Image 1 (tube, one colour):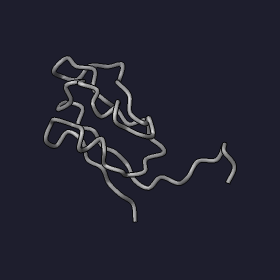
Image 2: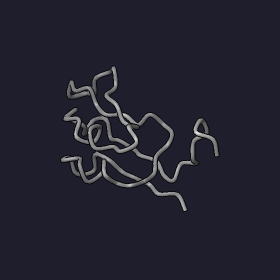
Image 3: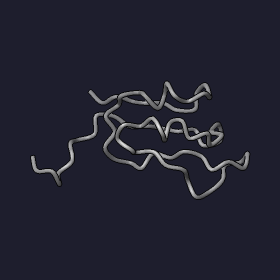
Image 4: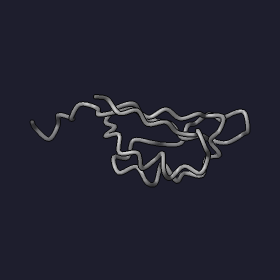
Length: 78
């Protein structure tokens, strides 16, 4: 596999935008750098975290870093 090819996703991340308070812990902790702050605001007025859509290893670090119960769900593919 060349360096320009990416490995297949091993999982995906779902972020509940309206629960996110934009603290950025998940963004800072993602070893793949796959999370960022959205340009839009959620209903509470925060720029929420969003998954960029490809490359997730399903490590779960973002899930454990998030202080909001139910804020992030990581699904690992089989």
